[in-house]
Image (cartoon, rainbow, N blue to C red; front, side, top):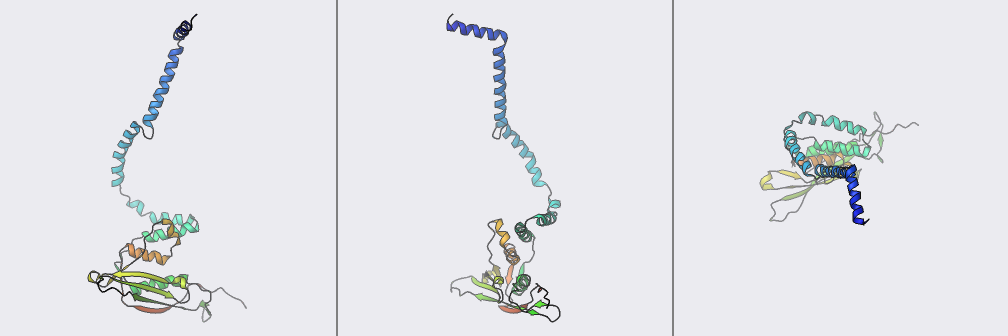
Length: 247
């Protein structure tokens, strides 16, 4: 029996017992499955059609939806997150929250900004090395603070004026601030712009103190500074209380 005849006999028998039809059906089924997988996959034609139709319905609905009732819940949500977050993330979220709260201040006087900084010093000044007063209740001695506006020497042709606003605490240099300000006398009518760098990385919020956040907020809200005086000084009482000692 020749090889060709043997092959024909085998094929004939498989046709008769339905084996070939079964194999063809299996491969056809696999082909359909693969075709559907390609059509319905991430980049398939059917998927693209479905995605287009979903977008046409959902996007306009989401754009027109009133989210005001959820926005009002932002504060409570942040509080919950702050209470359950690690200390490092807590600082970042606190600063983010403070930065996002709207502020309607159009202008602020330098004396008002000085008062704000004095409060920051009261809450954060280092008390090591300060004497303790025992008049009524034990308290740390007052620390001297002051501010001064240092004007730059401008070129005769310049239409802009620059200055540096210096807040200084003699006892604790970490409280000190240099704030760059500028103005166009022709257009600003005595109002100055506070120059502060914007946040490039949200993670950097965790390293900023509350006074830095306040200055950044003034800058992003376009609040103008009015120099109602060029310098002033005062004394600040630290909020921190001395630990009780027993002799």
